[in-house]
Length: 251
Image 1 (tube, one colour):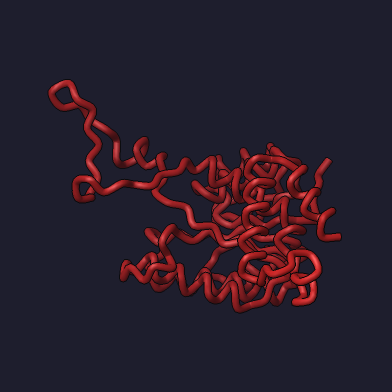
Image 2 (spheres, one colour):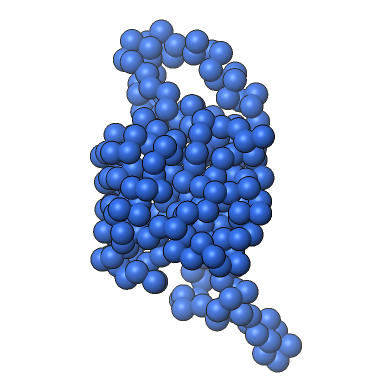
């Protein structure tokens, strides 16, 4: 039996991130609406067999997005900069966020990129920061912005390691000595699913009087850090103890 608040629309559901998120949510018995441009493809059929409602949708087609968003409680949104291009990706990201807000979506999860906030001058990083700003400004009841880094899965797809003189060699266009943060796509799916499941905690708001009553001498910024730490501990480690303990203390 499906659980959760309601239908969760997953965009890019037959791609890397969207597919990982859809599978993880289905495994957790959530109600998943998988959006794809190819609903008759093998990946879409596989999701349907796992229990997803597969719908046809295109991030460039506002009307198809409106149909896909009907009745959705939550959204996981991802765009493909390599396919769409920098400008189109930005338009897509803003379009679905704005339409989701108009459709009454309660919880919005957007996957951006690590260092999007650093003003790196990298076009496909900076455009995601602008999408983030749009999401934050829309005033969803709750939202999460994920910033995944380099996918380990890339090594199995287009950056395959080779051997040279008996040594394993990985060729990456980085200066020597520069560390590379990496994550597996399936782990992105697990984190995103956890973010959906913990929406009630992410939506907590505190009035200024509450700070003085609960944590004397501690201001809003410090409370936000405490809340973030509890979210990470409770969601990523799968521990309801931390969440319920936090809720009890602040009841």
